[in-house]
Structures are given as C-alpha cells and as structure tokens.
Length: 231
Image (tube, rainbow, N blue to C red; front, side, top):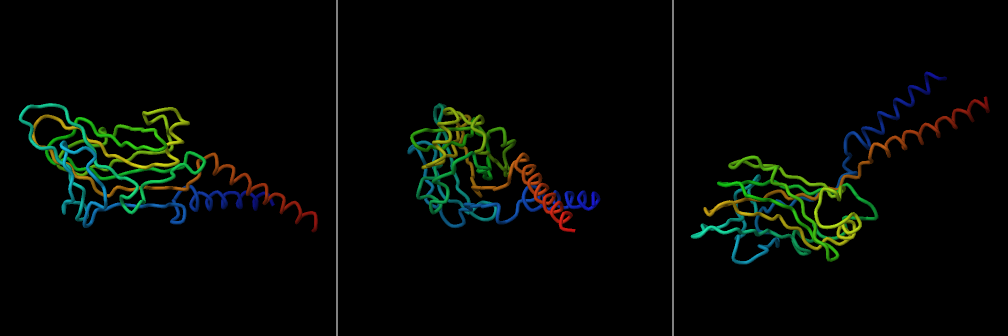
C-alpha cells in the first residue's frame, strides 16, 4: 500500500510538472507577435522631426520597423520612439494586462543596431494616466546583429514610474507602448525592430505547483482510506 502511494505521488508530480509547470502547454500560453511583413501595422513615430520611422523589407523573416536618426551638423541629444497605440497591430497590444493580479505577461522583440549602439534603449507604456519605463540597453551587446530583448510585467520593482498600486492600475488599461531610442553621436544611426511579442504564460509559480500536488495527495489518501474501510 505504501509503495503504491509513493509511486502515485511521484507519478502525479511528473504529470503536474510537465502538464502545468515544466513545459508550457499550448493552452496555457497566449502569444501574439507583430512581424511587420508588409507595412507598419499602424505603429507610428512618436515625435516628429527627430527620428524617422518606416517599414523595411529587412528583417527576420522579411519585414521590420526601421528607425533612423539623420546626420547632425551640430551634435545635440535626441530621443524618440516608435509607438504602438490602441489601433496598432489590430489592438492586440493594448488593453488589460492586469486581470486582478500580477499576471505572467511579458514583452519581447528583436533589435538590430546597424552602425551605432544607442546611448539608451527603453520600453515605456502608459495606462490610466501613469507612465512606466525600464531600460533594456544592456540586452543589446553589439552592432551588426539581431539581439533578443525581453521584459516582464509581473515585477513592478523592475519599472520606474510609481509604486505597485500605480503599476497595477496602469496595467489595467494600457493605451500605448513605446520602444524609445536615444541617439549616440552625430552620425546617421539606423535601427530595426522586429517580432514584437506579447506573451501571456498561465504557468503557476512553484508555490502553486506544490499546493496542487498536496491537494491531489489529500484527495488520493482519502480515496484510499475509504476503499480500505469498505474492504
């Protein structure tokens, strides 16, 4: 009896891990990816007169959002962004990221610096009147190659702009997302953005996984007790 129970517990742990926690099942992960295969998908240049933005056939695969700062005759700081608003990407990137708790949402994208690394690279978003941002420049190590950049929306401490309450309020109604670039030097600088992804992984934390296992164990133990009493 004890050996059967041990084998059952180990089997349940294996099943729960690989169906819930260890490998994300298709029904537990919701992913949207903007690939810019033919146009800008209603993304826009945030600030006129600084960095220009347009669709480019360059990408992985073909198609990306290209941004470039022109040559400066006299060097001065410039910061601009490409923006996803409520109409961009068919509205897939705006709306409620909160759902009553800090959900495991994340944003990610591929970034290519053609000739010069930007002096700063941030992801910014706004919702319910608050704006939050976080730096991702450390995730772009070099020019001339694609870098994969990612940020989590489940840790308010990683973002600047307010406390956890303000962060959750902003996530309830996200109305725009910026990928903000600050130029470095006065030469022309060209950057490409591709495969902007919104990922929602409904994967329990370790504590939740343990509770699931304990609950399953208690149900199994009660069933075995009743079976023994009947026999």
